[in-house]
Image (cartoon, rainbow, N blue to C red):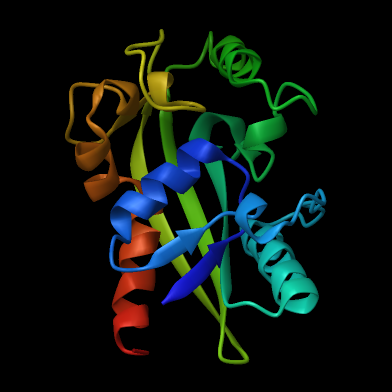
Amino acid sequence: MKLVFATNNQHKLTEVQAMLPKFDIVSLEKIGCFETIEETANTLEGNAKIKADFITKNYNLPCFADDTGLEVEALNGAPGVYAARYAGATNNAEANMQKLLDNLKDKTNRKAQFRTVVALNLNGKQHFFEGICKGIILQTKLGKDGFGYDPIFQPDGFKKSFSQMTSEEKNSISHRGKAMQKLIKFLKTQS
């Protein structure tokens, strides 16, 4: 089954393609979609829906889209839905991490969770899948792999950051991995 993953993020695309090897997962670029799809909702569900609906409406293809937020307990859930733009509109991961570390400098509570919501448009219906990974924000960056906040997020039950994990290890426990497993389980019932 061919499915459009409404993203231009090559890291996310590669992660998801590895999780869904039995499906032909194609990017926005592959279908010729070069428009910027503005994420204007104030919820993860809303942003995932906006992206999936844009592809369905304009390209008439089965599609899924995700949005992910990092919710930090001591910051009342911030950066949340604004995680990618936390330090400004440039989506600079280094600046985002530094701002988060600065905002947590005097906090002892470093509990956080990544949350991903996937919106799937298939056969005229829309379905949502959620994945959560709980952990803590580290004091400093650890590891060189991964993307986004991976170097400063340590999932519960582990002594290393997402950035220090293999992609297989991360995908088996991550927020995106959990949401995608729910998506996969659902897709298996559709074929």
